[in-house]
Amino acid sequence: MTKYTVPRVQGTYADSLTALGLGKLLSALTQNAAVKLQLDAQQDAFVLESGMPDLSIAVQLYDYIKTEKGSDAPAYSYDYERKKADRQDFFTWRKQHPKSPVDEYGKDPPSPSYSLYSSLVDMLKPINTSGYSAAHRELSSERRAAHFQIALQAFSGEGQPEAMAEAALKKQLKGNKANNVSIVQIFNPMTGKGMNSPKANSIGMGKEKAPLVLEALKYAGWFVGAVAVTPKGSKDLKVLVVQPTEIRLDTLTNVMSSFRAEFMGGGAIQIDILAALTLTETLLKHDEHKTYRRGRPKELISGFQTAYFQDLGNAKGVTNISFISLPNWVNLQDEAGRGEWLEILKEHRQIIRNLDESHSEERNLLEKYRDFLSGQDERAFLEFLSDYGPHMMRVYEQLYGKPEANWKVRWFSEIHLTQITKAMGKGEGMEKQEQRLTEIIETQGFINIARAIRGATRNAVMAKKPMQQKGKPTRQSDRSYEIRYGLAQDLKRAAVTKQKFLAALSSFIADYNAENLRVYERRANRMEQNGTLSGNPQRRVDVSTDDLLEMAELLDKHDPQTVAMLLIAYGYSKTKREKDDTTSTPPEAADQNQEEQE
View 1: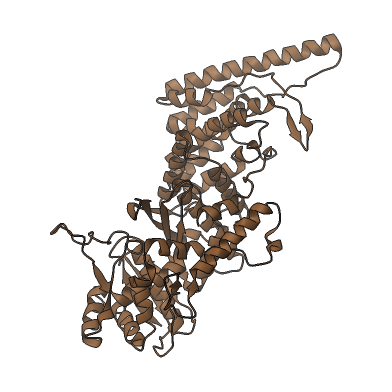
View 2: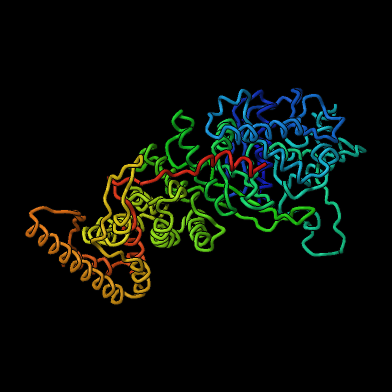
């Protein structure tokens, strides 16, 4: 086995693209033999292992993109204009046949990788004279093997690969004008025009150059591990590139192919979250075929490096560079099996997709969830949960009976929250955190008080509306109990100290038990007068003194804000026997999303 090292010199997805492109080159030069990629944190580099490459093998690293101006394009080029027309034909057919299965279309539907090509056509204007096309032509010449040898030598030793490649180019391909190409931002988000010098030394933009073959590796890596998405309602571009942890190139290629077919975007924040959740689901599904060892999906791919390109009219410029991590709490070695984790991820993905980040309240929710996902931030997750339940109550009230309610209203499952809460703290060195959270949610007093909160909030607002299924009522309206709309906010405000929180909780419990007694007495009086009971209300169980004492003991050992947010999260969740009254996905969501990405 031979080893190659790709240092992370830029700290952006440019390094990942180089490593992925080098992996694709090695796979081709070893006739598709296994190539392993690993992120070495000590070296801050990607390390690749492969068999001995054969430079005599003809290799096409990536597709040449033929546009209407590319008359000299090779015969085997990607015909962009034809693919674009085919795509438009498909969406025209879909609008005319919204309920027909795709199989009835009669032709292949658009490829999920189309946006990878369309984004390059948009960003590399004109693409036929860009470095992308120039590198393809050069690597199709008789000098191809010399360029590949330079790349392999640059990454097989110590030192800076770019400097080593520059030196080798001057020695081996002296006088060749196609040795270097201009650096562009879509492949190098931090080193585009005018951004290379550590200190400004001129007012001109200048065209920065890099060795052709090193940039060509990024072009090849683009089609292995990149995702290009247009955020909903904008002309901007969001680029996400996977960062391998330890994985074989063929596995990663298959995973990304499946991921692109499943991934649905949305707003800018939703894209980050949905990409991480969908990729985790995809990795879990691949584990069914024993593709990799049981453990955390994050141990194979750590997440996505991203760049946001804002539309500036005649061009797009980078406005944000970030990293979104795959969830550390998904672990096949936990009690939950693969099927349960897939259900949990599906539930989260559906909930996130139903939020609209054009509304400030929902955008705030999405930001908290992204903080939780990206930084494995327990606090951010609890804040998200404690705000999501009250928000969903308002949505339920506003949308009941409207078509939007068929996919907008979704509650978290109590059993899924328990699995995540237990798993969140099981990372390295986090055992005490896991024990701390588990102790809270498994205390009987906590469970009983959370049930009381559910009865006074979520259950009360849902009981107010008659449930219908297939046009027939399956549950009568029940207005027996008051709906405590502001309860979550009251408890969160009081959770600054143990004493204030206990006082607010005790006040709620006293009112809750008293209301239970009043409803029971009215029910008993109707029974006595009529002999029958009409409008049978929900039966709620009182909170006991022991429950409150157990809660006081928990507050002696735990932060009142953490306990308060957990109580709210569980109080606004649905129990195992309950089902959502609605479906979870807006009609034709996948097709609409594909059109947005065009």
